[in-house]
Structures are given as C-alpha cells and as structure tokens.
Length: 84
Image 1 (spheres, rainbow, N blue to C red):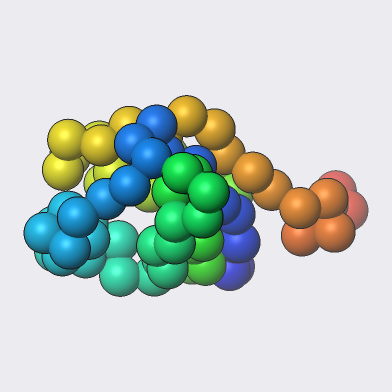
Image 2 (image 1 turned 30 degrees about the vertical axis):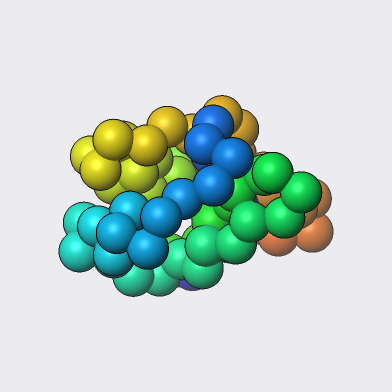
C-alpha cells in the first residue's frame, strides 16, 4: 500500500550534497523543498503500514545527519480498512 506524508526537518536549509546523500540512503521516493526557512520532504512510500513507512523514512533522514522535527499527514490521506 502506498502512503503519503511530509517530513519537516529541523534544518532550515539542506545542501545539494545532503539531498544526494538522502537519495543514496534510499529516500528516492521523496521530494525535498525549502520555503521561508522550512525544509520538508514530501514522501510517497510503499509499505505495509503508515507507521512502517514513516519510521523507515525518518531512519534514512537520520542516517545522513539530519533530523526530523515533525511528520505531517493530511486527514484525507488516512484510510481505515475495516476489520475482517
């Protein structure tokens, strides 16, 4: 299942080297942007659960020396599957 969320970084800006390192760390399913001193990564990730998708993306960010301040998820992106 595909999950969409945004990671907001603690760093106000990232360098091209850091962006390349994120890609090499496996975060090739995210788009990095910076606006008004806030850097975020919009991620669309295939994973069994939203939690798993978020945890793996945060791990990749941390592995290149960056930190995540918050995770944003749009309410309409969360789909609850009925129990079987």
